[in-house]
Image (cartoon, rainbow, N blue to C red; front, side, top):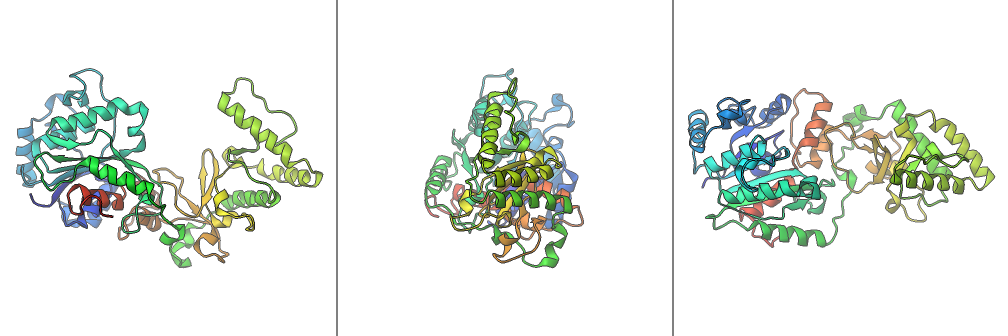
Length: 447
């Protein structure tokens, strides 16, 4: 079987970047988003004439009409006629597929008909038609959670019914759990479903790959540093400096750290809405919120036992109460970043401005890139210990390094589009690690 692949729900090419390192050739890429498709073609121009915008132009005669679903033989004829792709010529089908809820009607659970109307059904159609050696599918962490137990079971059974060896328990892996050859300083847990055709002798059983991943997780923790993906040159990053408003919010919380320098900050979110002498109003609030409100009020009373500190806190509160509600909340998750002798400062931390509050973390690994505006801010001393520059957001190029796309070109598109695409992308190093082991490129058990 030639080393070839079909890239479904391709985004900006995470699977392609990974499989390119293993000398795989892309026969077809499918991506509906025009901006992502443009970036894909910019980086893989050889695929410019081998791209489809909608998978259902392949699996249906009329994409919007479920009554025109093509048979396996019809799909083969269509792909041969348009792209020269034939059964026996596809080594792998891969994709980060959207996961829609499956219908409870139709055939028995596990039957392919249960997935009708979902995009996973289209993956099954292509797999049945082309019989690739391997499947690698990616999805969000929640797919392996209790709410989606039935959906996951259907996915696994449907793949098995087509004559593939898979594992009833998917792999859950994040790039920060891998070594520097494959990984990156980003916590990004995703679910991976691996499968190989039953007659492929050199393949590694997906359960064996999962066992290796579990051993990896139980081994020594990786020593990541957030600065490893950052550009040092000011000229490259000046445009990503935070604005005056963001700077004012962070300066206020930096002041809070100085006022409370002798106190251990709590692990629960700090909500300043109850930083006053009167007990919080709890009637009608859910139990979890009552707990947070009570803890925060008690924390305020503790902080203001001494008159001098109460004066400082109350003066600080006059400023903080001019901020939007989400900026009056503080999620301190950085106790491990400071020993007893070092001074707490936001300048050494990673910061996210979230709807739930200002969240701060140690400068080891980044929170997962997401497809919304929560781009991580790095403190000036994260870049260099003695650096005194401004806080700034990580750039799209730096975010791309977190996804293993070190050489990606975004063309002339906006940064907002690039951040969104990277937040939706699959991590290159994780895919390479799994693909090498599934296909036998690296024997299972070797690291």
